[in-house]
Image 1: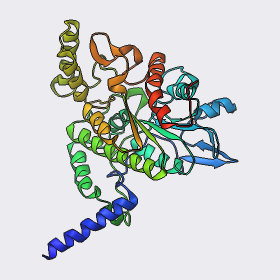
Image 2: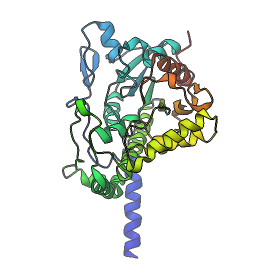
Image 3: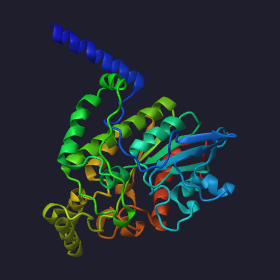
Image 4: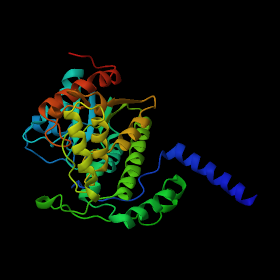
Length: 365
């Protein structure tokens, strides 16, 4: 009876904390690829500057396109957050040709590009917590690839022991009650390593345990982003990221399973075999250097887009298709995840109707 009463009391405390503080943060502190120190956003003379973005020059036009915005503005505006797909990932592409700027033109609103190479959902939670004090008519989030890519590049959960230890912490840290107690002690930091640009794919490949925990933390972060948008009363557009499935896996993987599946899918596609789609999807998910977010993460993100203030744009399923195959067209990408000029244009076209619905004050030109 005492245990039952204690369980009821603790359960009520957990419910109250979640209603007040929202979903708990991710299970462990992870190493970030961002060079930002301290605050993510810096206010000076009425302008807000993202400290995590590189400076390309002093021209106001360039600065604006990078993400500098007025602290207070009566004009309709929206912020786009994500990694290098959002900003800086396509070689030699000016910011004005990235999908954020194109979206702004289509919905007659200012598009604030708060993307930067390396940012993942861990970083976006911190950025949005600070952004929530500034008026925005909508947030657009394109995130998922970097969580898995950084999990590999930074070796966040090294080997089976690292993954299992992380899982053990996650069981308890999934509760706000435990998290509030945990804040009294130093936060655990996952193992990690600085990526070497000259041999970026030389790190040990990651396995199921690491992938499973990356997925757990990613969805936990995205739940918190959904909650933050609700608290700030800002419409949130979640974009399910797309990748180039006709490019081969990057990892050798155990017994070359991913590569075998990919070759099978390519051969089946050449023979117009409808089974090609399943083989290519399985090859992507089996890749042990997972630059492309796996299908399980895409499905998890789709499930989060049911709150009244959340809109979903499914780029993986709705971008223009590859001829004869139900995947995003290869012409939309310059590599496994980064968009070509046509890809940025197609993504802007895809997001625009949904964003327009979330921006009642904006009208198409």
